[in-house]
Image (cartoon, rainbow, N blue to C red; front, side, top):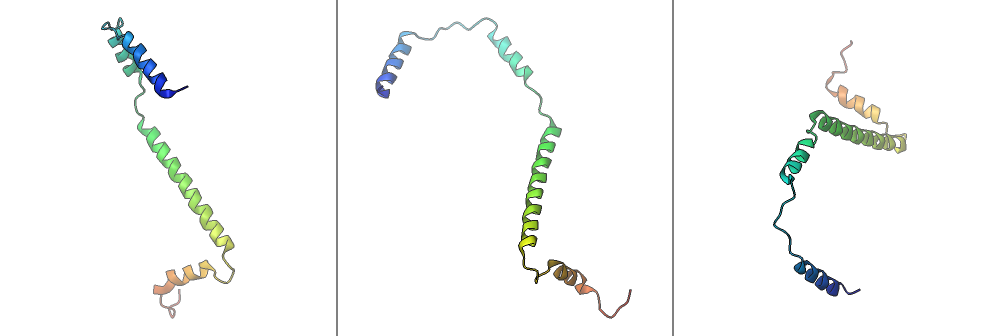
Length: 96
């Protein structure tokens, strides 16, 4: 079917039946009742959704770092580098 022809027929049919000026009975009350039925925004739901998204991103970071450390060659141990970096400011000749 030709879309241009269909559009022309639909517009002609719409012009034959103009919209009425009459508003249905109690239309305003129905609209206002629907607006009152809308749920009130819950602040705790927003926080819970944000925290769950944050938790999922943290899990993704942990999985990526775990995979990185698992597939890193044994010769480069990150814990030795971390110890050296953290204890760099401590003098070596003092005893605890």
